[in-house]
Structure formats: structure tokens, C-alpha cells
Length: 246
Ligand code: 6PG
Image 1: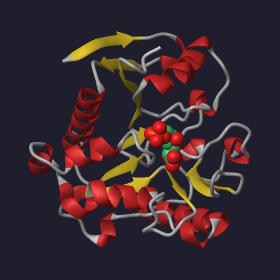
Image 2: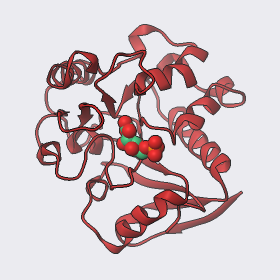
Image 3: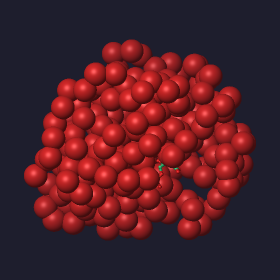
Image 4: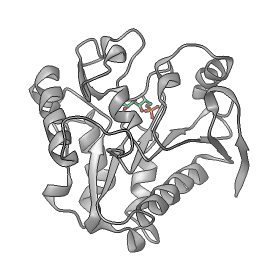
């Protein structure tokens, strides 16, 4: 049962939904993604978050009832960022999504658009941008035609999202859709930039656990952090569990 739904002012503007625990949070996020997919005619582009928080969301999607209803044949899968590690490495966001979801649902290789980050951040960023532009069918993002149907993002303890870390040059990228993050730790990264993340018809931050409460409190206080500068074309949603809620 949703604990609280609020139209909150300030940085958590948009729709903030607070769920009683991590399990209900994962179910809410999975249902949101399913509803976005079912409400989208034709091709669906889903941009997935890495890290640990969304893993249970992806696992749920591979189970009934979500698995039975999801329009799998129309969905294309993308990532918001990737670590520069091999695609079977324990720290790979691709490997995490494969294990939690893609290996357990009907999907063709043509529907999976992994970030080729293992060859290095600069190469991965260039290759991923080319893939995104091929999929989108244009080299420039049109304001009224979002690249992604739905985007899931997490928030790091330092206020980063995707691999847009505080102070990273990628934060200042306003043209390219992707960026290399050589300063990423513990390994270099490839990330979508604000223009690409903002080109989402709907976007949801999924944040769980007491450890994330301080960063959300900082966000509500108006601290300048990368996560504060995500302004999607469509609706911005915050899905929190009670432990994380500021
Ligand atoms: C990554 C993610 C990153 C993540 C946050 C939160 O590659 O690490 O894209 O932005 O969403 O760091 O990570 P957790 O969900 O593991 O707390």
C-alpha cells in the first residue's frame, strides 16, 4: 500500500511516492514501468539504471504477473551508464540486468543496446551515441520527440546519478548524448548526459534505504548536486521507501 503520495515543491518536484518498504518500492517501480510500456503504442525504449537498488525491480519484471503482461516484443533496452569493465564482470550494469531480467524474458539481441564500455570510456561513449542516434533516426534530439519512453535512475550518496559525478566534465555536456567519465571510480565510466536523460517521456528515480536519506535531505535543502539537474521532457517521479524519505 502506498504510504504517501505528494506533489512536493522544490527539487523533489513532480510526483513523490513513498512506499512502506523496499519490497513495496520495487513493486511500485515495476508496475510503473509496466504501465508506461502498456500505454505506449509501437516501439518502446526503456533506459535502465545500474547499481543495486533497481535489481529487485528487474527481477520482479521477469516474474508473474509482470512477465505475463509486458509487451516484450516491442521493448528496446538501454542503460543510463556503464562501468568500463567486461560485460560479464560482477560490476557490469549490463551483466546485472542480464541476470535479473534479460536472461529470463523473451528478447532478441536486436532489442538490447548495451554500452560497449569494455573497450574504454571514449570509445564506448562514441559507439553508444552512434547506436542511440541510429535507433532515434536523427543526430539531434527533437524537444517534442523523447528518445526514451521511460527512464529509471538511481541516486548515489554524493548526489550523482547515472555516472554524472560531482565535478565531472560530463555535467557540462549540452550537445553530445553520451560522455566518457575517465575520472569514474573505482573504474572509468560511460554515461548518458543531461540532454539524453532529459529526453525521456517519463523518468523515475528509485531510492531505497536509510543511507540515502541524507543525500535526499541535501537535495530538498537545495544543495547543488548532479541529480538536481535532471529535468525530463515528461513527468519526473520520485519513488522512495520510508527509510530513504527525507
Ligand atoms: C551505477 C549507477 C549509479 C547508481 C547509484 C546508486 O552505475 O552505479 O548508474 O548511478 O544508480 O550509484 O547506486 P545503488 O542503487 O547501488 O545505491
